[in-house]
Amino acid sequence: MRAAVWHAAGDIRVEDRAEPADPAPGQAVVEVSMCGICGTDVHEFTEGPVIIRPAAHPLTGHRPPVVLGHEMSGTVRAVGDGGPADLAGHRVTVDPCWRCGTCYWCLRGDYHICRIGGSVGLASDGALAALVTVPTAGLVPLPDVVDDLAGALIEPLAVALHAVRRGGVGPGDRVLVLGAGPIGSALILAAIAAGAAEVFVSDPVAGRRAHALGLGAAEAFDPQESDVRREVFLRCGRVGPDVVFEATGIAPLASQAVEAARRGGTIVLLGVGHGTAELRPISVTAFERTVIGSLGYNQDLPRAVALVASGRIDPRPLVTSVVPLDRVVPDAFEPLAAGGLGQVKILVDVKGVAAQG
Ligand SMILES: [Zn+2]
Ligand SMILES: [Zn+2]
Image: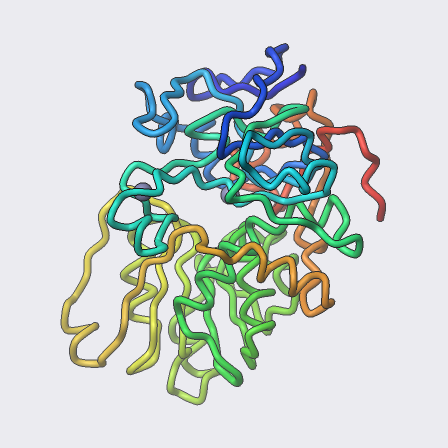
C-alpha cells in the first residue's frame, strides 16, 4: 500500500509499505478515507524527531521510519479478538492514543497523559496510508450526517474542545486565541459553541487572520502591527479577556498570554513548544490568574462528533485544501513548513474520495 513515511527531518517519502498484520487483541485495522495534517506532523518534518522516539517506543516497540497521520476518518476492516466485533464495517474516526492501561494515570482515567503513552502516527504507523492499526478503545463511530471530510476534523476539534473545557469557557465569556493555525482555528469554533460572546485572534499571517474571521472570530490582530494585549483589553471594557489560549507553541508567547488575561482570568497553554518563557510570578499571584496546560483530549472525540452531528459546529470551513496522498510533501508539508502561506488545515484524500464542496 502507498504510505507517507517519516524517515528524518526534511525527509518524508510516499512509498510502498506492507499492509498491517491482522489486529491483535485491543487493536483494530481501519481502512482510511481522509487524514489531516497536524502541526505536530509539520514539526516532525521541519525539526524532528520531536515527539517521534528515535529508539523503540516504550509502549508500542515501534521505531522509525514511521507512517505519519493521526487525524482520520475511515471504515473498520478488522477487530482483534475480544474487541467490539460489531464495529467491523462501520465508519469511524479514531482517538489515536495508545495507552498502557495500568499506570497511575491510566487507572485514574487520564489515559491521554499515560506515563508511556503515544499516538498512532508517531508511536506507531499512522493513517497517511490505505490501512492503519489503531487501539479499539479509540474507535468512535460516525453517524451518516458526519461525512468523511468532517470525520477527519474530529480529532483537532477534540483538542480544542478539551482546551475549552480545561479553560472553563462559558456563556458570555470573552476569549483571546494566540495563533490561528489549525488548533487556534478549531478553538474559535469550540469557544463559540461553548457560548463565548467574542473571540479575538492574533496571528502574523494575513491569510490566517482572514480565515479566522470567516470562522466567526470577532477581530483578528497582526501582533507585528499592534499591541494585541492592549487592543483586546480596550475591547473587553478595559477588563481583558476571561480566557486566553496559547496555541502556537512559541514559548515566549506563554508569558504574553499570562499578561493578556484579565485579573482572575485563565490562561490555557496548549501549543507544543520546547523553548523557555519568562514568567513574572507576580503576574499570576497578584491577579489570581490561573495557568492551565491542555494536552490532546480525554474522551472528547465523542463530544466533537455529537456537536458536529447536531449542527452546533460545522468544522468543514477549517479546511483550506484537500490533496492526494502522492502530493502530500509538495502540497501539504512544504507550504505548512513555510509558515502556512494562508493554509490552515490540509486534508489528505487517502482513499481517493473526491472532496465534495
Ligand atoms: Zn493532531
Ligand atoms: Zn498508562
